[in-house]
Length: 307
Image (tube, rainbow, N blue to C red; front, side, top):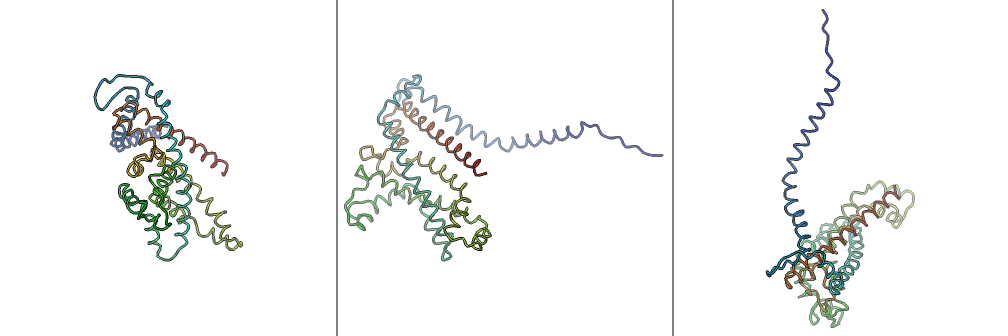
């Protein structure tokens, strides 16, 4: 007597796979639910609420609060101080991004090839990045920039008013920011350099390549993705500059260093015009989105060309 095996229906496997997929989806939603709730409560909802405030005459000092439509935006676009602060922000972004990228790369190359007390070099370059903005501001205010006994004037033998002269105040803020934050870019570049396979350099040495040939043909191309990441992060961080400028110059002298975030802060918390300050903030928000999308598109095109 022979036994016969009944084959399962053809639809059994797809149904089982669908149940497994549905189970994973349900468990995944349970895992991400706390993050989604926090994301909605502390990012999405404040963003929506802030945009609504930008369309109103809300005032933290009290008074009437009613919708004014896009009147705050129209006033902002006609406000010369808003445009001055936006220009200051763009100038600071350009002046700080270039040296922060180049110095970060240079320091990383230096430390990567040095075999003597590497931990000391890493600590020296990355250490300032760990300091709070208040400590950095106080250090440069009390030790570096004073006209009579400051380190720079004492070394150069000058009496330059680094933070009181409108022609050099922005350069002073850029110098402070570069010293403070270059360690982050240095660390990213150093990690990327250590991930490059050494056999590429060995093969290039066998072919007679010089150190400059290795840098130009191997190191820099393989650091392309890291450079793109650093440029994006640096531009976004520079567009949102606030702490060190507010603590060291408060936007002066003569509004020569006031960034747009500080202008929004002054209008909202000193002038008590929260609705108008929200409109100024959303103008910056749109600018950051445009810059981010432009960079993403540019890097994507470069990736397509290189591939």
